[in-house]
Image 1 (tube, rainbow, N blue to C red):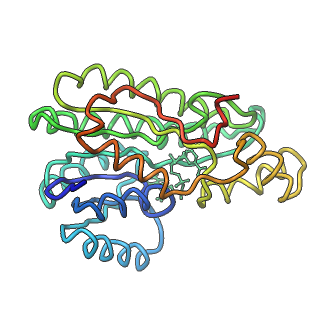
Image 2: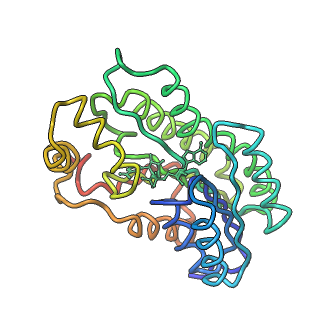
Image 3: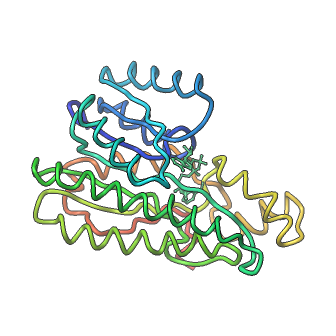
Length: 261
Ligand code: NAD
């Protein structure tokens, strides 16, 4: 499939699943705007590599997904310097693992802001341009936690269930305009986000690292394998194609059988 001439904006794409989306879309020829935090030199190297891959423009935005004005400015800059976004992926996300009585309220606000509200602000900014073109693809990285809960992840589970509802609503609003809106819901994917929650889970559940990996993370995943970021990105590329024009308002699981149980 060729995405030549298309512009994609992907939040939280300096690492993990977001970077895999950016690479997969650039490999199909799309101009991409990446976003997120990290080492400036490493990000610049990724940006250049994306341009080489796509033969189109690649830009980096350091917009903070907790700041609605920065999200709007990121979309504006993308429109001016690459093109009106045809594809928007709300992917930025953080995690915090603690019992509700130990959960810092500022972590609740940050998770709801980054994992849920930023997707709403992104959609609000890109939908008018997509409707005007009569074509658009919006994808949110939700999670198996948009369908089932786990203890000690109250903010994350609330945000991801919220994302699934947001996607259904905007899918209905945009369906007559050639725009599709879907969630991809992975199980555990081996990325820094998963790696970083191991120490907290060890502490909150009193487990060793191996126990967290096998008895907590992969316990729920019948394949007993982490999903690869590239697998998630392949599904996003499929959703961007014309063959996926009738898939909208869906929450597509890629969780090694987790939520089949
Ligand atoms: P990751 O930590 O590798 O990537 C997160 C990205 O978000 C990074 O680019 C980071 O810089 C960016 N980010 C964080 N805070 C930000 C902010 N305030 N503003 C802008 N960018 C910010 O994690 P990942 O595992 O690739 O996660 C990506 C998405 O996939 C998240 O929404 C996550 O909830 C979801 N997800 C991950 C898994 C998994 O097992 N890894 C499973 C299901 C869903």
